[in-house]
Length: 150
Length: 144
Image 1 (tube, rainbow over the protein chains, first blue to last red):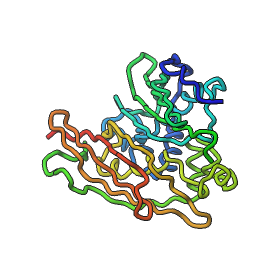
Image 2 (image 1 turned 90 degrees about the horizontal axis):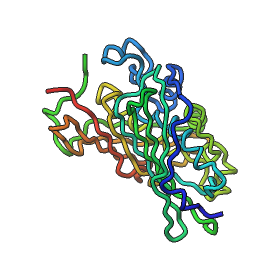
Image 3 (image 1 turned 60 degrees about the vertical axis):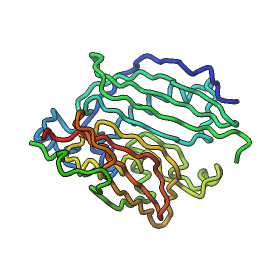
């Protein structure tokens, strides 16, 4: 089934609250080799003016990919994940993410285009705190290879 | 307290940091668990080969996340990185046994005095070939 281009422009309202934990930030920091003490040491983070330990710059992908799943895993969207290649990613931090944050994320399908059989899908996650204040914007583009392309 | 760099003394093109990162299969399993990205092309040789890859490859997001640690350490504060983007231009095959070496060089790409920010451009290569394209991190500088 081909990628359904009519999904372009769709918006999904914010879903469940994601609670950022110190231990999840530690796990993500260790996996990416992020050794800055502000990721794991509360006192080091507070010395820099943060209320708690600080997420690495790409941590928001954890929240974004969960949110994107409601679109990319929808059978109607026609996205064959075995043919997906990650094309690009961008994080814009309106403020740092800290342990203890309660975050909700709205998903926007900004573009679904096809050219020579290759489909390009751009999604945008708007991550906000529970009062609606913006925290981060994550824009991701996936390329889906055509089915006759090994 | 702030260890953030200041604009004075920075010039476009200046190298500010460089580091060699290594990644092995165990690292990819760890990243899969930490990130929630369990795509088997990042841990299963058979699946990777079946979709035409040379073998298990690193998550692009692992490479992106690992590369920016160089910027965070230079900036002195993870919260100073206000924007970070990249394109994924080439997969990073991760051998077994063994490991892949990822070279990261950070240079000053642009200075914005009004915004109080510096754009740090990352050159990220494996065996001399770029694996990330337009890898740019915007860092908020300390007040002069």
